[in-house]
Amino acid sequence: MEEQKTDIGIDEQQEYLINMGPQHPSTHGVLRLLVSLKGEIVKNVEPHIGYIHRGIEKMCESITYPQIIHLTDRMDYLSAHINNEAVCLNIEKALEVDIPDRIKVIRTIMSELTRIQSHQLFWSTFGMDLGGLTCFFYGLRDREKILDIFEETCGSRMIVSYNCPGGLMYDIHPNFQERVKAFLKYFRKTLPEYDQLLTGNVIFRQRTEGIGRLSLKDAISFGVTGPTARASGFSCDVRIHEPYSAYDRVKFNEVLFNEGDTFHRYLVRMDEIRESMDIVEQLIDNIPEGPFAVKMKPVIKLPEGEYYQSVETARGELGVYIISDGNKNPYRVKFRSPNFVNLSALNMMTKDFKIADLVAISGSLDLIIPDIDR
Amino acid sequence: MDKTSLAELIRSFDGETEIKDGKQFTEVNVPSANLHKLAKQLCENENTKFDFLFCLTGVDYGKELGVVYHLRSTEYNHSIVLKTRTNDRERPVLDSVYDIWKTAEFHEREVFDLLGIKFKGHPDLRRLFLESSWGYPLRKDYVDDINIVTK
Image (cartoon, rainbow over all chains, first blue to last red; front, side, top):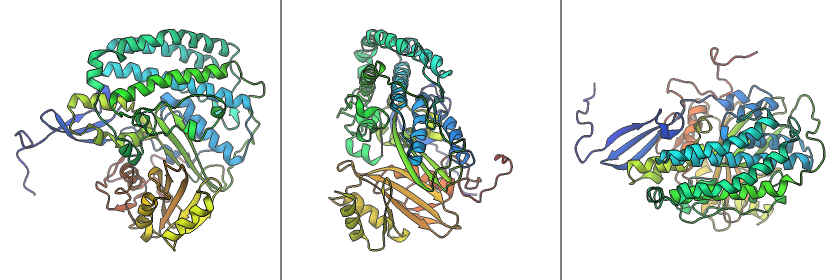
């Protein structure tokens, strides 16, 4: 047997190894980070993932295309509607189906509502991670109103499964427009409370400003996308660069900052809530008449070939890559999940910061673990 | 740059590549021996600048194993698909592109975990999701009587 090391890191020269997670409250799920510490300074972070790996990509190979949609809800459950949309758009692109305007507009409105509720939950939990427990109650109070709208139209609150190939499962509820408008009016009034409570808070700013800087070059090299990358000045919004659904007919700005620290990753999300509200406002009164779904064949078979579709979820670019051999189930499906890629940059961002900053930095990435593990 | 001149340029990098014009992306098939050299040129050349590797997929083609790289240039906003294959199913080894795009670190670990393709030059090639005793589940010949229910 090899000689065992007896000194496991208690003198000054060596590093402590500390396990953060898998049940740590700030990891929001089962993420285990193996942290090497020198005193209080983080030297290395090694993510250990796979606690809830379900093999979704393998499962997809033996089920039909409409069934895949229901699995995508279970990846990034806070962007459930947008994940569904990605698969549907890919199938529709492969079959060259023309989608009526009504479907496109409703999908866009639902996507933006999804984005708002996801960012609300980010704000709640990020505040809570950094010690502002009140945020959690404020955020969930407002998020509930969007979930109620979802419940009325989709029948489900979080894992909506509202899309199907060729359109939507059912038409919108008669109250939908009215309730969304009421929500926008309400939330425009309460959003400044968020800023009063957290954005301007001295303790919060000291814990986030200048912490965990990610440069533009690193953001591109690590393939980071979404609000995390846009805080570093990486213009990567799929809604602008490759518009899908109804994004080509609305006006909105891509929120970009150059600082790339934790505070600006937070600010991007706060500004994106405002942009999303603008998008919904432009569309909500102009939902065209028409069918809510195109009639598709009962058994969907994609022509042989490869199809790639990316969409912008609340956390970044989700890519769906389907290789079809002409059968009713795909040959290979790959989900390029934004969280998986964003996590890879964590080690570089936390280097030489304090252990308490690790919580702030990983919180600002807004990680959803089922999306990492898939 | 339009698709044809881009294809010409890539062909000038490496004579052995095979370029197909796909529906969505231009498809570049490269022999596994030339992969790293071509990838480096694609990333560093002034006219291509594919600096953003946005998707890396391992595929089991039956007799062969392959890896598919989706590349985009953040400056010129053009994209291509780079593909490579290996015949060796017992000990598949490809070159790692970690030194070109850092995002490849996790992606390649995932491919190694689920398909068993080894990447030469990867800094830390370990299983990512599964235990080391597990097989390679994304391979088409993978059999698991207990966990996979077939109708």
